[in-house]
Length: 98
Picture (cartoon, rainbow, N blue to C red):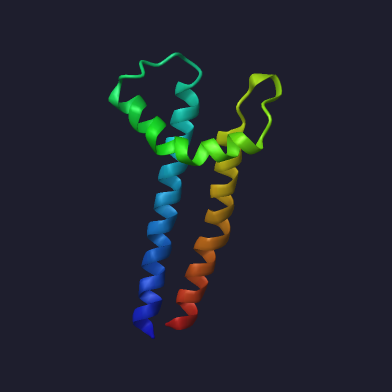
């Protein structure tokens, strides 16, 4: 069972890293939305392509009060919840299987 425990511990570490990376990508997307970026810039295109599939459904559900887009904040809060709930749960399960 120690192999499954080690696998879950590694999976929790990778998931934690991936969630943090995506949070920073969302923050970068929110920051560039405050200026008018060049839509042909490869970095801007990457940020839009990597975040739009997650932000679009949240935008549909949330009304835009005063034209302010709160969808990045909602998605970041959801990712932090996953990070605080799922990663420790995987680590705890991995510890129990060792």
